Image 1: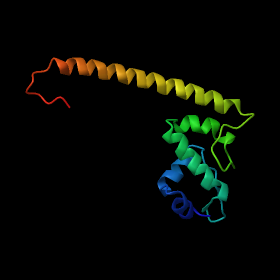
Image 2 (image 1 turned 135 degrees about the vertical axis):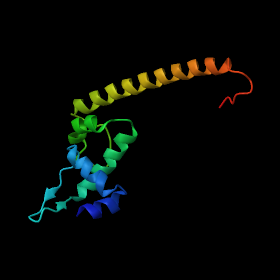
Image 3 (image 1 turned 180 degrees about the vertical axis):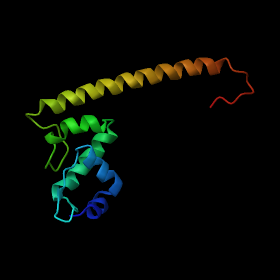
Length: 123
């Protein structure tokens, strides 16, 4: 299938699909005329990439683990791929730390806003 077909099938723009290719997340075959040809497995891969991005992983991290999920129908933690599990644990810890820092920042802002004059908006 061509890039337009993959875009329609996945709901991901052609531009973003080309970006995924630049990042090494997708590897379409190039035909003699230079057109990208995607396999049916690439539909699932794009969905996996979107799920991992929504989970907070960067394309750099996804690039390090994408080989673990290639040609799978469902995104699951595959056996025999400790890199994938290790990266997920690191990203989980990073996100947890970021949330903690943001909560601390919010508490500080709340404390400052609590001292603001009453005619100010407290939103």
